[in-house]
Amino acid sequence: MAKQNRVSHLHQSTGKLLRQAMVLGALLTAWQLTASSGRFPELLFPPLTKVFSFLLAEKAEIWQKTGFSLSLIGAGLSTAIIGAFITACLVMIFPPLHETVMLLMAVMHPLPGIALLPIFLLWFGIGEKSIVATIIFSAFWPLLANIVTGFKTVPAAQLEVGRNLGLRGGALVCLVMLPSATPHILTGLRVGWARAWQSSVAAELMYGAAGGLGGLGWYLYKKRYMMETAGVLAAMLVIIAIGILMEQLVFNLIELRTIRKWRTASD
Amino acid sequence: MPSVRKTVILLLILSLAVAGLTGCRQAPPPAASQNGDGETIRIAGQFGLVYAPLMVAKDKDIFAKYGLTVEWKEYGSGGAVREALTSGDLDVGFMGIPPFLIGWDKGVPGKVAIGFVCAPVSLISYRPEITAIEDFQSDDKIALPSPGSIQHILLAMQAEKVLGDPKALDNQLIALPHPDATSAMLAKKDIDAHFTTPPYIFQQLSEPDYHVVLSDREVFGNDFSFNVGIVTEKYHAEHPRGYASFVMAINEAMAWINENPYEAAELLAPNFNLDAATTLKYMTWEGMNYTTAPYGLLGFADFMQEAGYLTKVPEKLSDIAWENVLAIVGKRGGTPSEIESLQHRTAE
Image (tube, each protein chain N blue to C red):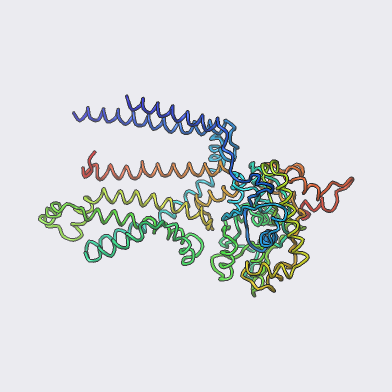
């Protein structure tokens, strides 16, 4: 039975892969056809060949910029995660805080982090610190919202069982609440990562306030000002690729290792 | 597998859409049409000391005298103006020669219709130990308006000359609009130097400690048009009367400024949040010249190609300038005339 299940699962996923590949291939072909039809100037629709040769020619710089962007996101996102966890724990320990935090969340969550960049530039100066602050702000609220929801929705029965087994405080949090809240936390991480990634690119792209090496947003900014549309598209491909890699390698792996293994999520 | 079949159908629809997109002509852009007797022109409205002729023409309604109705458009940056010229949202935009050449190289459909202003462009620092670009340490930050701007190209020219690599300082650049960079400079924080233009250059140099690290003259050797007016191929071809009216209106505004500097300063001072005396001082600062004559049109291209900012250079002036500009420069028999020579860079 299990074996049959696995076979049909495999069958399904090859079908899915096939379809995905077809759609992607069609999109790329459509782009290439539009570009080579000569209907639009190359400035507007550069052919894919040019985009890929750009990727190859500038791979050293693109690597460097990607590394820089990822390091800023690493700093910003990890701070946001730690902050969100601490805040969520405080909310759980001191229930009166819940209302205040909910209010703050309602006010702050709709505000795009990038809108705060002008203020951050004044507070933290022109450069990396302001970008990291933007990333922290962008990622913090969705993380907090999901972690709090995760903690709040731990089934009472599970908590009771835990308590009956003699678990208290930290042990209860780590062994019962965290695993139970993991689906929500994972959603928070996904949204937080996406927001952080978007903010880091947007901050550099909008204000060009890179300084130092600069990340992918700065690269896009430069390519825009040099009117190298193929370069702009090359950078976009890199941004997409990193998004997919993060999703497939990191989040799906965490999901497999945690909630799928623990069966807290249905298949 | 039914889902695969559905995907195939979807792909068919998609390919039809693409065929439609590539097969049909682009919809004609709106506006810029004949308007009764007169003509309409869409101009990127820009403000500041270097745009004084445009502001005068607008304030004194000189365009109307020539039967020209102006639709003013506003954009956040020089890059956006160039993109608007490309997408057909705009008929006229003003920009530096290097950003124009980058656009020209990449196929932005437009040429120089008018010289606009010559103005001093200088790299300024408040740190006494920085007196030349060789003095920059690797963690010093240099602000300029954007990559590919006239300031960036001048810096790259000097970097190639004294540091051996035009991109030597590229990792220390911060792209900032002039007002933001000036605030940072005056607060002496975040940036160590600023490659800037009037009136910011005058504001900074009026303070103690602020000094010129590199001047345009040192790099270029002679004057160059800091800004030129670009008119699109489409507008030039389809609206010769509108084109002529635009050029004449700017000529008249410019002549008025030069003939009546006091009145011009009084007219413009409120726009700059300055008093008339300071405005006059800035407008007549050493090196300021409101003139429609082109300077230095061909002086940046060779360097920009060598440094990799351009893939090609204009072979002749008519590649990048409309006929009224060609007529000003002329073509002397024998050796080139002075104004022909002034289209090139004399410093090496």
